[in-house]
Length: 279
Image (cartoon, rainbow, N blue to C red; front, side):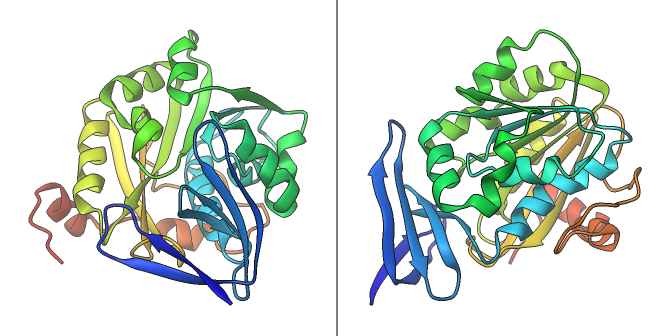
């Protein structure tokens, strides 16, 4: 059996996975896309040699990226999902029946096509009539948005390098803030709390320059570097820790208790931002 070796971005570690079969391997305009089959994780989606999802545990990431702000917001109707060409985040947003519109903005159309073929349980929501697909750069889409009518923006990007870097700047966060309603909320993954602390701090500091309310929560993701993944959220009005709608959706991991316990405790959060937290 051959092995796939992943060098984790920004981290001094390497992961290896047994490969039963290579199901797909091609280069798109933006990146190399590989789908392999692993005896434990099932099918795995790999972009530029970095694992993006596995059939076995993708729900941890997609549920936690999506449902925290979707339940912190009192009535989200219009949502923008940037990235996440596999469709997992779109699938989770669609579980909220009050959602009327999702702008699904993905720069690489081939990721969508591959996901539809190899990961139908993840991507099936993409064809929902409430979803409008935009094949373009997410930062460009936000820049062209002229009205402040969006309730939630979810950034589901690849690692914060290359073309994804434009989604983590002060300019991007400012234009994003301006397209949100007064109650609008934003969330993005912000790398490993264990390996990428400097990046977690940088994103928090950048968000604080733009939004009055900023926070940080985490979740266990076995296939991501450090296994302790962070999510940075921000709002124009509401804190993300409070649940404003009773969870009535079907999930595997997320629930109201997980929601409350996932946020970084205030004492630890203060140490993080003061840069006195050391592992």
